[in-house]
Length: 202
Image (cartoon, rainbow, N blue to C red; front, top):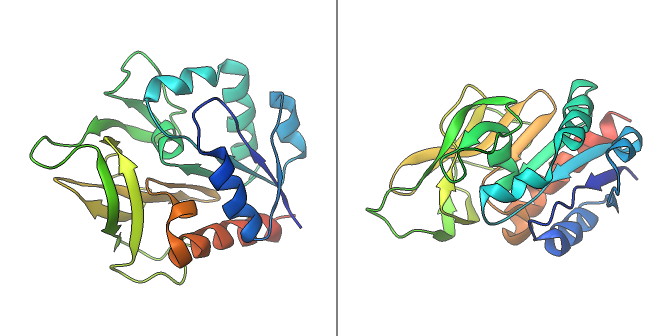
């Protein structure tokens, strides 16, 4: 059973993500120091709320997470964790993201209800390891006010006032704007696909 490091940087939703990953067949560890990532089979960066919370991922953590990605350790960013994979966010312009994907996250337009809370359809853009088994139009659960732009790494989009990246994938690095841990069977499929990727690389 693969061990996944669930990063706790004070941005919430750890309990539900932990429960979802366990249902998908993973053992969960919460690393207390960046060096702990050296022993992890996979890494998950969760989070809800303000982009400024990612400032807690200081330079040492950033190097450790980037190093894990560089070694081919599978990584999954969820919600705020997906946004952190990008360069930056309008929400906290002085806080840098990981910069693994180029682009800036922007606030959803005022022409629709913000925050975007509820179920919405995935618009599948290309085949994806993470979304394997999910069809175009699959409903998943969102709760956010800011969203990542379209990028070369985008594998699925969603439209809420504007079209944005709902899922990204680059090699063994993945991210989803929606909450798989709250998205029923579709969300469990996403987490299971990630855990299988982790197990396959052990």
